[in-house]
Structure formats: structure tokens, C-alpha cells
Amino acid sequence: MNEYDDIIDLPYEGVRHHRRMARAERAVIMSAFDALTGLGNELANAAHEVEEQALDDGLREMEW
Image (cartoon, rainbow, N blue to C red; front, side):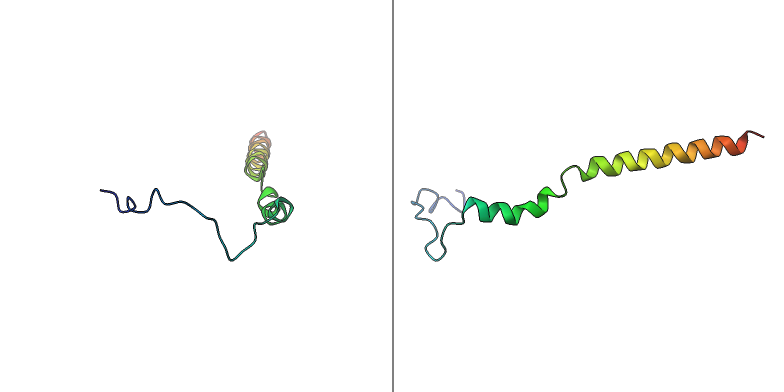
């Protein structure tokens, strides 16, 4: 027996104390997370460029 078996089939009447949030309001709250979209890719690209530059610099130092 699951610990929630006694309540799993009860009807859900929603939250009575708060009004439902409008989509526009929800979008404003979630937009902060949208700003981070693609950050991982940009960091990976920047790291790759730094590695390439370090390798190029190292090879130039070796050529004497």
C-alpha cells in the first residue's frame, strides 16, 4: 500500500486563497531564467577559443 492511496482519488478544487496567475505575469517571473538560455554553449565556445589561443601561443614560443 502506498502512503498516498487514501487521497489519490480525491477531487482537486484548486487553491482558494490566491487568484490564478495570468500568463503575462508568469512570463515576467520566468524571464530571468530565459536569460540563461544558451549560456552553457557560450561558455564552452569561449573556453575552446582560449584553449586554441593558448596552444597557438605555445607553438609560437617553441618555434625559435
